Length: 217
Image (cartoon, rainbow, N blue to C red; front, side, top):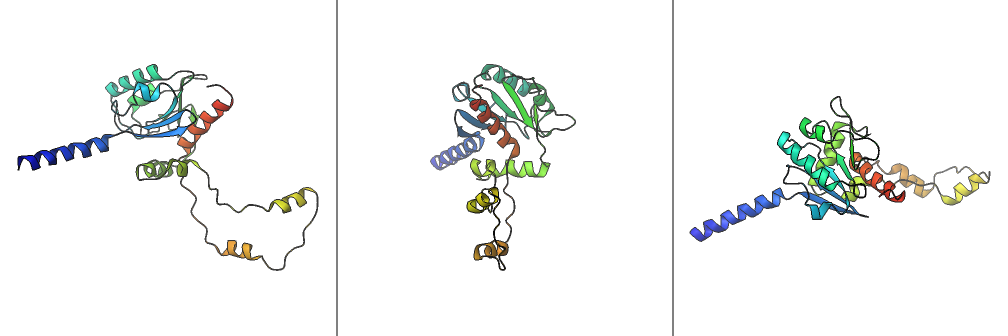
């Protein structure tokens, strides 16, 4: 009986650790993503974060002045000109944490991105509805891939390349009396809902790639 009880307690502990494990993703090209649920427990270690740029997602995170102090110390230790920290925040991030990641001006090693509100002015502001942002944020927790949340809809009808070439040369094509089979299928095909994109997350990745291309980092 005691052995069974010990095994049960061990299982509970392991489940608790699994739930508490911070969500992180390697985004390639020297960029990592870390989602914070609790501070300071979910802040990445120095080995995991200091050697590369990272995205620190603080959206919907509650934190007191003590947690804000821990965050401030972590940013000072990890954010550098060659390994900037892109902070994602919003109006649901606690005021104490927002005070730590307040806009720092051009050239800062910490860049804040998010949807602005009366109490929150990020370095890079995006216009996204609260419902869309929350849905995209939750999707990653429920198994959506990073690529699906960052990529635009690639399944769009494209103009025929030959037709585009003719149009550039001023050539006109005969008007078809009946739509082609492909066009008929396209018209008959029901419209799919737009892809769920995490625009704030996406912009942070784009900013990192742009800085890489410009050899700023």
